[in-house]
Image (cartoon, rainbow, N blue to C red; front, side):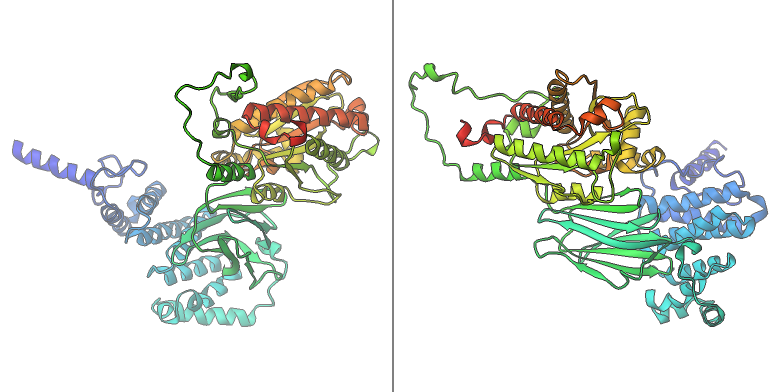
Length: 601
């Protein structure tokens, strides 16, 4: 008897490990089948997980009265577990299809909108992610049927598109295809012309594609009329990155278009197409895919794709590398060096300071040169920015200060100074950072004038990219980004993603130096508050590959500071403070000597 009990326990243990549920057990999980939120135990492969879910599906189909919604949702989770953990396994597409089937069944029995949406999403996921799956045509027609239940006009398009996406022969194998095709053609002939206003059908519009490129960096921006969900994937031989935009159609202006990029770019072209009746696809054709990053910006909604062919290199880094490669090998020093103590002070090599965290960045350790600086006067064109005392516009103040700062830098150092704008024109926020990245800029300084609903607030503050730590910083970022603070909170995950490849420490150090010397220059003559260095998710800093900061020089909305910002004497004080702060930062980096003009030495 003892041996028999041991064998029974051993069999139950096998069932537990392999993930098989006990047939007909309505209380799923109480006896010991696989927990869907746990990692699979060693030895449990995708086939075993899938067979376990299939066995459960058949048992529940045979006796549906014994199972409630909770059991069906857990079954869907188990199918999802298969392809999430084993996305390339032979049964992955089967698992996607079965998860969709579970939600379709839940919709038929409960008529819940969320079940309808989940079923549609999973069927579409199968079509786009596993285009060679034998389930593809069936999934497409399942979507058509679900659309038809809600009287959505796209249902007929899904049927008629089957031969294009797959083949007529594959579509013919689906039992209901011929009858659905006849009904779809009838619906097309009887239906009135499709409305041109796609917003009335709940669809977004892909309005345009913009790009900036260099041999090592490319930024692609997709302009959309509304927020959309999207999926991405990589295809090989040849290398392609695709982005599927759900509930999106192409505008008339870009239908059938492609954009060929310059010959120096690693990205060869960008193509767009209406992959499904309500799914637009953007394809990026590469010679060879390297690192890429995708994030969104709001108001208007756009999807940004940053692509790096190789590790990003600034102009100063390239110059340092080139000089190191061509530098002649020094001859060995004599065994008894000459006594040159008299000029020891002149020969002292400056040691770079540690940053706030007490460590040394690579730039500080190697004494990287700064060869190219970009100044970014905020706003411009149809975007005036904040309006201050006497109607003073932020875009005019920032351009005046940036021009003065450019001249001051050029007088002091032998560097190249670029401007995102040198006149009154509008430059999108994502274009400003793309300009800096594509031109290998070493430092990026965005210049702004502050504003507040509280007219008493005044002072100077400097920002670097990170999540906001106080409500005021969030309000400033929302104003400069032209979005609500609620929209900014939605971008938290993208900010953390971008920070993984952003020079946060260097940016914070640059902000500290600029803030300190800006206050030191302005305060002796003009009473002002030191509002300190802060962090916030500014769009204009997102994706910058170099130390990048945003300076709020003073408050346009404050009675005194609003008038001072129009005064050239005050602007000169601001410029002098920014120049000295920049000098202190460069000296701490150990690169100031290499920047000094020969005439000044």
